[in-house]
Structures are given as C-alpha cells and as structure tokens.
Image 1: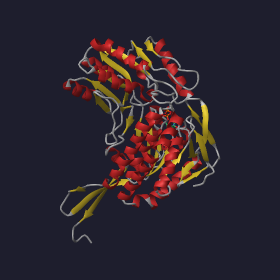
Image 2: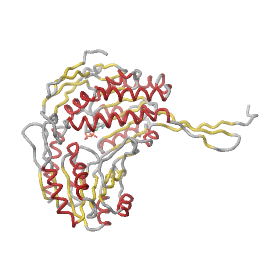
Image 3: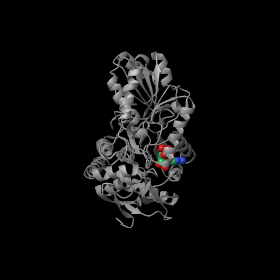
Image 4: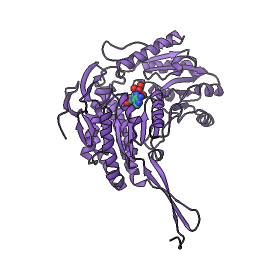
Amino acid sequence: MGNSNEETLTLPTGKTIKIQTGLFIDNEFVESVDGKRFVTIDPSTEGVITTVAEASSKDVDLAVEAATKAFSNVWCHIDGKERGKLLNKLADLMERNLDDLAALETLDNGKAFSITKTIDLPEAIRCYRYFAGWCDKVHGKVIETQNDKFCYTRNEPLGVCGAIVPWNFPISLMANKIAPALACGNTVILKTAEQTPLSSLKVAELCKEAGFPKGVINVLSGFGSTGTVMANHMKIDMITFTGSTEVGKSIQKAAAESNLKRVLLELGGKSPSIIFADSNLDTAVKFTFNGSFFNHGQFCVAATRIYVEEHVYDEFLKKFKTDAEAIKIGNPFESKIYQGPQISRKQFDRIMSYIKTGKEEGATLLMGGERHGERGFYIKPTIFTDVIENMTIMQDEIFGPVTCIAKFKTIDEVIEKANLTKYGLAAAVFTNNIIKAVKLSKEIKAGTVWVNQYMEGDSSLPFGGYKQSGIGREMGKYALREHTQVKTVQINLETNCN
Ligand code: ADP
C-alpha cells in the first residue's frame, strides 16, 4: 500500500487514527489523475478535518477498467463459498476495528459516537455476514417443459455495479450496497458522499487486508459530478443509489440514455406514524419520538407526519414534547449525547428555511425552530402542530430534527391523509386492534409498514419504496434478484439431434 496519501487524524478525545485519503482503485490508494483534492468538514466545529482525492471521469475510467478485469478474470469464477469467507473476514476485521471506524464516522458525520458504535457499525457488520451466507446459495431452477428437452435457469451476476451513497449512514449504506452485489458475483465501484468519505476509506483498507482480489472493490471520493459520470458510463452495468428523489430520477434518465444499465433506487420519504387511542401510548411515544429525531432527523424513513386520534392527542403531545425537551444535544463524542450537528452548512440553512416556511404557512411552532449553540450545525429539536396536508412542511422531505403532529377522527380520514404524498417509503401504525392494524397495513402505500414499533430493520427484510420513494428492493433475498440476471438454458435431448 503506497503511503503517500496517509494522514494521521486527531480526534477530540486526543486519540489518533491513520487513514488513507487517496482513491481506492485495484487495491491501491492512489492520487486522482488530475491531482485534485477536496476538504471534508467536521460538522460539530465547522473546521476542516482533512482533504481527500477527488475522482474525475478519468479516475472513474480507471476504476471501471479494474472492476471489469476483476469481474471477468477472477471474481465471477470464484466459488461462492470463497466469496462468503471473504465477506465474513471483512466483518471480522470491522469488529476488530470497531472503535476507529465508529470514531471516523462520528468525526465526519457528527452522529453520536455511542450510537455509531452500538447501532451503525453492528448493523453494517451484520449485513456483511448476512450476505456472506447467501454467496453459495444463488442459483437457478430446473423448469419442466417437454420430455425431450431439459431446461434450467442460471442466476448470473450483472458485472460492474456502481454504488452511490449519501452521507447519513455512510458505513451501513456501504454494507447494504456492496455486500449483496459481491455476494452475487459482481464487482463494485462505490462513490461515497462528498460530506463523508472517511469511514469508507478505512473499510477499503480492511477489504484489502481481508484478501479481496484486486479490483473487486473500488472506492472513489467525489461530488455529484463523479456520480453523474458513473450513471452515464457505458461499462457500468448497474447503479445502486440511495439519495434524493431528484437525483434518483436523473440517474434513471442517464441509465436509459447510456447503456440501459439496471438501476436500484432508494429515495426520499415523508413517512406517517399513526397513533390510535387504543394503543399503548407510551410505546407509541417512545418509537415515534425515535422515529422522528434519530440521526438528527436525517434519514429517509423519518416519522415526519404524526397523526394522533383526537381523544389522546393532548396526552400524546405532552409526553412527546417532554421527551423532545430532554434530548441531549452537543459534541457527538461526549457520552449520553443523542443529537449531534446536522451534516453541513447547506443542510442547516435548508432546514432553517423550511422552519421559516412552516411558520409563514400558518403552522404552530410548539418548540425548537432555532440554532443550538454558537458553533457547529446544531438545530434544536422542532415540533410543529396545527398542520394541514398541503403545507410545504407536510409535503417536502426536510431531513432534519423537524416533525409535524396532527389530529384525526376516523380511520378512513387518516388513511387518505397518510397517502397524500408523492412518497411511499415507510409508515407506522400504533393500535392494539389487529383488524385496524391489518387494514392500515394494506391501505397505506408504502414499502414498509411497522405496527407498534418504528424503524426496526434487519438485513433479511426487503426494503424499498412505493411511488417516488424508489425502484426495487434492497436487502433480504430480494436483493439477490436485483443484483443478478436470469439466463435460460434449453437443451435438446432428442437422441438423433446430431
Ligand atoms: P443529499 O441531498 O442527501 O446530499 P443527494 O441525492 O444529493 O442527497 O446525494 C446522494 C449521493 O448522490 C451523493 O453521493 C452525491 O454526491 C450523489 N449525487 C449528487 N448528484 C448526483 C447526480 N446528478 N448523479 C449522480 N450522483 C449524484
């Protein structure tokens, strides 16, 4: 490994971590062809952490060349069991380096270290292990046709998968993207988000240490323009993307206009959480609170439209507000912190502008709505009430610690309101009445419906959106279908066919 782009970072705790800041292509960390670099910012201080190499189209070409060679010459010929061993080895190394990986994620992203260590990292590790188990179980079927024909299908890899991820869960989204692609025999080029390149570069180091062959995993730091090059690339066979609906649409368009590459899109959301009077209210408050404010509201399934049945509305609101007021906000490396800074100045300004619009459009600001502290991109947990469906804050994905709470009277009314959005990623229903739970789960147009819980996920569960929340399903065995193509083989068994 060339050490020319190795940096030593000092954490606020005083601990130092060595990191490679180049582009990871063909198992080496290299400078970009043009020598360009960009800064990554600590959102809790607004100061520069370090610089990383920026991939241009020339670097994408080099990564594609490496990934294509690795696919044809090595990876798709390796026995599934061996691929599984490598994914498990990577998971082992991540466990061994848990503290450093969690610290890098916290430094770059601003999420609480205690949460990164106990949620983000374990989730990513579980994902690698889960897909390691599938590596030797991706197979086709025998299909009975006529007696003198023998027909079977093969589930073959697509080739080179480009993965483009956002900044809100860098290390776990890296796992969600690359583990299924690799399990199915594809090679990958991951483009990290410009705000959070660091943890994935550390994982790239571990990929090499785990023994993945050259070119199987490539990691590029860069902006949206690097992603655009990938989406348009004639030799990339699939783009798996998580991010905004707007960018998702541009990727689908680029895919159609280039080589008709496959797309898997996990996009925005504006998820309703519906609380009936017959639910356990403390459970509803606990889950919906976390559903709203976890990760500082920066997640696509955030519960940002909370509907509460009118007779328990006041009680719910009181309890929910009490919990929101107790949120510990501040330096993400301090213990017991729940909320760190938003990711960037741009996001901070965007969220504050939504708060302003909410007030202007007539919603009641129950709490929050302003900056926390003097330095860093911190915003106080914010609750709006007296909201109606056509308000901007009830329609747009805000991606911040801002939630809206409304009352409802009837089940039909709440179903209609819950569906009044262009998104359809997730929803939650709180009730002790199984009939209501089943009815709402059926009627709400969303890829995931939680009942009496929020945000519980598992690598084995399919995840994806209805409507403009996405195309396709990640995770579980559904992900295998997305990352393979089916070949039909039909053999003539007539004895006189030659
Ligand atoms: P966010 O608004 O949360 O940053 P984006 O959808 O803008 O979400 O970005 C998610 C990821 O997509 C990032 O890695 C970003 O660099 C990349 N990206 C942004 N614009 C484009 C684009 N036009 N084509 C491909 N990738 C893009």
